[in-house]
Length: 329
Ligand code: 13P
Ligand code: SF4
Image 1 (spheres, rainbow, N blue to C red):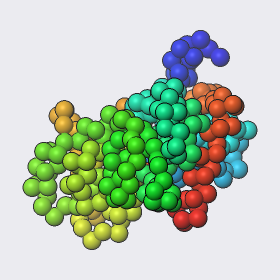
Image 2: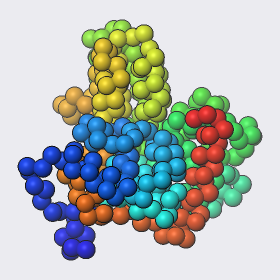
Image 3: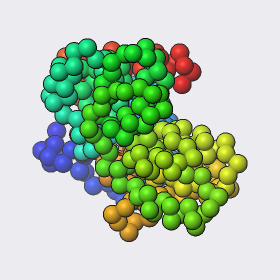
Image 4: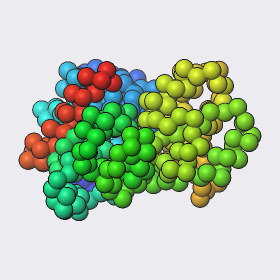
């Protein structure tokens, strides 16, 4: 391994500008029996080339069932870890190892384990946006697609810890009437949506439906016509009679929304502290077509999970997949 690659966390070999990258990626994935999984927050060009594009639950489900020898996870690190835990014998690549997640980082495993230990009578529900070490002290993992149903699968009087997203936790508490103990974490992208700017957009587009991801603050969720995961918001937009949609989540989802609904108008909700019209996750956007090509070519960087941690983390992930399958999710 080259010193420079290790230092940077991705293959730094320059890519020949004359190459048709999409054709080359296609050739490599066939030669190497690789599958490219992409999250909705990836750039348009990565979503175009990926074999499957979906939300965090779909990415885990596809990883669990693929026959491919190599999984290239075009998403962030916890998504690669989840794939690796489910498929320990496969090579799991990520175009850039620096693609982390501020929400996962807001929950250091040692502090979370101490919090769990302080509440021995509680069961632990963790959002998938967590490190493998956090999942290792978790009873069941959830995503925003299945969080409500999985929380409701516990008896009403069950004592529950929910981590790490306080906004998602508060939202699930509010719709289920539960009183889960919440970890105080958040995503830097979703926390930034501004109520004032969304209200101003609504005045401009009075008939628009407001679509909100549950990682947004409660005050933003209160404005919503629909609060759901990325896949849930896409489904809602596709089924809706409305023509205009104000979308409060990472703006990568607009690619799939526009592709599926070419006659509808999708307006990204802007963040509060900038003049940018849309809100991007700087971690998700570290993955580029060039890095994806190099990752496939050199089969590096690989996502690794300590086998002892993976042996504990797999149980709550599998429990999530089993409950989701029972629910038809
Ligand atoms: P989804 O599971 O809704 O795709 O969310 C993933 C994520 O990282 C949201 O910020
Ligand atoms: Fe993490 Fe937020 Fe980026 Fe999603 S949008 S990957 S929660 S930092």
